[in-house]
Length: 448
Image 1 (cartoon, rainbow, N blue to C red):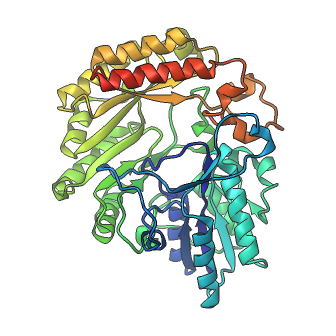
Image 2: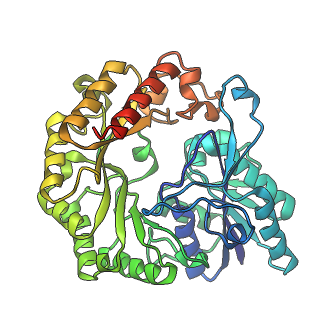
Image 3: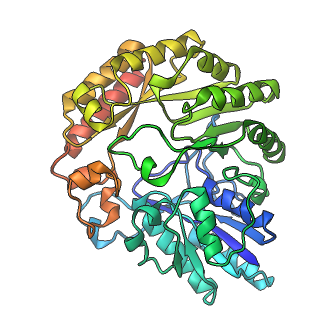
């Protein structure tokens, strides 16, 4: 069977390639290839695709850590956000280029029997919908399956996407069972979690892996418990795949996107780090990054030392807020002492202040301006950076349900960049911008 995997554009008021790769789609692609299917990938967010590089367009350069800006173009706003003074854009490969690739395949008699479209943020649904429209126009008789986080959290809304089939699962074994029930004839995979980077035929700036799934904590603003259960990849197998992928792509940056990478670290992450060091991957100049927040309470000196030896250069600690009342109410995953201990542990391992930062949430339900300032000041006192995360209500989470967001609300309005313009229970746009301006000033002055 010929199968097309499609990673759609991002439609948003802002987007940046912070080590993005459609890892779920690439993992599915590995399963399909192992089961004997002929599979191709169309990644609209591939900033290095040859059709872009050869188009004559000015393409933003990568940063040294492998991240970079997407090409973008403004698009018409839907009615739900007409009154909000932000420009909606399509990020990624221009649609005309995407259509050209699809039509060239079609002209050369490569027509898929099945098409899989993935999706991530619920408020990015417009990109998935547009992708399905383009695919239906190009391959009108071919069925389209929509999967990913969006249809898992909002299956009823996703049924309006134009897809022929909705996969409302993200747990690997549930996805595998669902597809087999719909006659995709998948064999048991060699790995449930390792992506296949052979779909890319050009050098890549970065690779992304997930070494584990699930999280032991139950934060009220997070959907991970609803989406995943604990699962761990074999460290030896993952290390060998990393080496092969580095050889093939020439990438110099690897991001690990686990939700709770320190979960069971003695028997998992520590073993992976030892493998990375023993395989001399750092000696190749490869840098590692942890974009998701580390759980401060679980960090040990041994793990921090191994991370330093493995050449990790981006360490972000998930703090959110140091308001004790909110910390307890939202799940109690850390306290002020846990945070301080984690920072000191990383410094003792040899990490610099430029390599360590904390995620600080803005606009959490019930949060005040002073809460945010107190948390930011603590980061400054400890000598680390600050990454601001604006709160976005996620369907299916306790916070979302307690705020009584109605199902008919356009998911686009849950975008953290748009929420302050209409949600009267949070901070104002002006308050949030003032905090950001103060942070930027502190960065310029070298305080963080």
